Image (cartoon, rainbow, N blue to C red; front, top):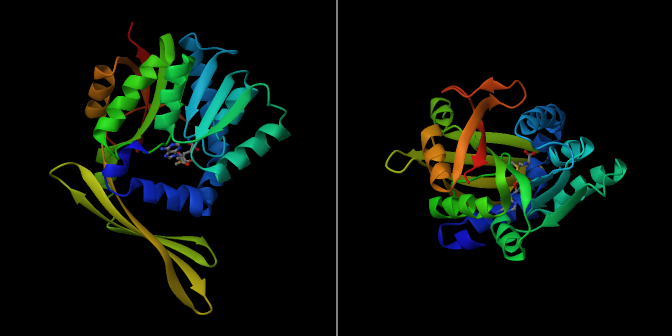
Length: 271
Ligand SMILES: C[S@@+](CC[C@H](N)C(=O)[O-])C[C@H]1O[C@@H](n2cnc3c(N)ncnc32)[C@H](O)[C@@H]1O
């Protein structure tokens, strides 16, 4: 993966998305219903931008198919990419249950490599979406990906980008978070924020209960650059995209504000 030189992002992804993917499984399952509502709202915005039924949509970091599956049900031709074979297997099962194999394909790998491969093959999409996919591991790579995505999207194509609102994170900042994954697994995250570069430095520890005590079974650390709205918008504009519309919540379609936890912004490729 291209970000290797910038800390331990590869180790973090390996640990939480490939080795112990159950750490995020419960959260993803809980968000599945929201995914259906969000997918309906995504398609209503897409349609206004001439991205209707039958159009090709690339879902980067599709996870368990929260959006890819309902969007395929609505008639889009979906390509879901993810680095986690575990999440992809769940997504494939959902697709099979709903007989969507003609409208939905899943590819395993790193999004940076896959987008590069689409570009090399000249494969293009009408729209691309990156929902809840962590950006900020490396600003240069983020920019590179935004630029490459403009090359794999048709003229007047659309990019729906969800990013976490830096200002929401700071107003709700917690130095420590402990989450119970199951009766015998717990994850602990210790965070600090660097005001010099708007980066969150996190250390993660995974514990397993063995008999009556808990044992640390893995740890990883990660630095993530948080973006405020104007920064991400400027990056996207420099990468060839024009912002059209932004929602603070894709479930309710309320507009983006300082209090929004996420920004769900629709961009159009500049011709
Ligand atoms: C928080 S989940 C979001 C999943 C889905 N988009 C959703 O909204 O439910 C982030 C997903 O991105 C995937 N992911 C993270 N980094 C990736 C990378 N470099 N290449 C491919 N997939 C990646 C993870 O495996 C995970 O499924």
